[in-house]
Image (tube, rainbow over all chains, first blue to last red; front, top):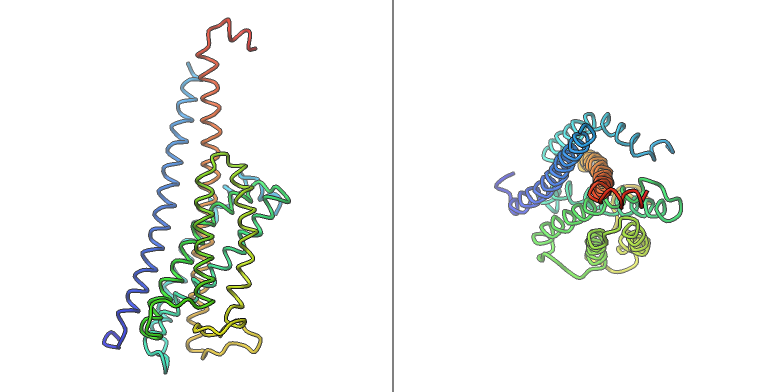
Length: 52
Length: 253
């Protein structure tokens, strides 16, 4: 299979698709962690003010 | 269904669904890729036919996501569904990414099969237009600060852009194109041999599961982003109220 003509195009297509999917997943997961952390900080700050 | 319109219920459902959806997506991809590489090579295309197993599902998703965004736009403009604009905003970058995969893998298939990476063929051009519309929607969401105005503008642009969907689908029938006509979803049934068709269906299902998983995650992010914006505004208002001198506070009260 690997020795077949044009196999490089097959590898390039799968690598490009996989890279795009990984970028999507990483972007969404990072966004989620950033938003969750910001919400936790804000809620903790408001809770601190309420307690004063 | 109407109950799902509540962001709190949606977050609870997502929290339960995601731990099942993510491994199911991974399992479908493992099965799909195993079948795709075990399938026999095509008698004309040889091993290059394996590009079809990522190109075709990405192409299906590129139009499916836009159709879902069109429904969400109606939800925004007509029914003012609480989650409709969040769903539409979350889907746009995913649609752009799957359309990019479709265009790029198609181009990598075209070079060995057609002798060129690109031709201004009706199918290729209409998919490129779809990609540009997706990018336009992402840019529109980022350029308008007020989420309500951004949602309405994006909904109108999405409805205008949906004119392109039948052009993408029927371009191969309406014009003489280098791109082959429909070979899976057609009136006379698929023209692809079952040994090649089944891996394609499994990969299609894997791509769909991936989209649904990422879409739910992205909608959850949108809900959290809005909650954060609301809390920030409340905190700022409380901060302003506390910062004012007592006399001003009494007048304002």
